[in-house]
Image (cartoon, rainbow, N blue to C red; front, side):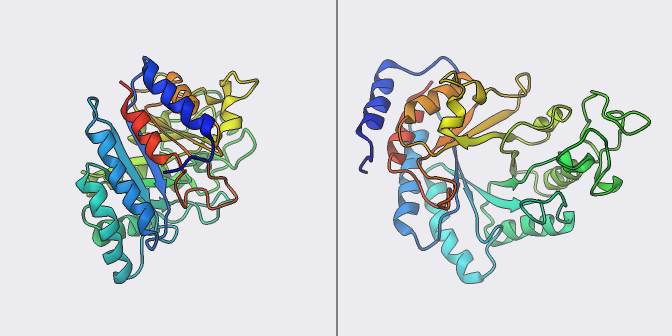
Length: 311
């Protein structure tokens, strides 16, 4: 596979030679919202799983797949999907099905729990070998309030809010107490998922930090994607990488960093994610305005090899 940037390749090889940082790398999580017709890309993803499985330090190789903003809808697509996914699993990878939880990407209204559960069931029925579920738009803020403000208004109703309202005072103003998730929309959803399909693992994509009183939501999924941003943003300010800091540094749960728009520093992105305490990571040169997860970077194979080389 050819590189667009020779410096990127040299940087990765140099870091492989000098050894991995002390922090432990658990593996890769790859959003692969790739057309089923793109056979060559699926073949690369399947083949490269072997690097992480055959390394001295076994690594996770989890691939999130997406039909049409959720599960596939035709029997022909499910049949084709199985031919794309099975080789990944045969080489030790895992397949996660995508579901989303908001009615619009810019709004605060949840999809009904019944509709999200139906999507999860469709993944299990359509591809019985599914290993987990990726919950997109993992935004618990909307259980208790809209995007702005410091008052609990419960925009989706109290039936989808946490049982314990101790995070607010008598006037519903937030009081600095951490929200306890049980009873809320995401607790209901993940609780149902774990009881109905106990073998499935759960990734929650928050895309960034939670609101300051909702840090506990890291703990109701198996992995939280708590960073999804550009390389330039991750490295800011002034190449200090402060923006890559994790919010919840005491949880035992795993966290994922997705760093995109990266055509210059494969090794730096991965090394910094590890040193900041993320367990899983993925970086790509693809950009937000060009179907960001609809393909893989030209350095994908080297990225797999590089992560496999970390202790």
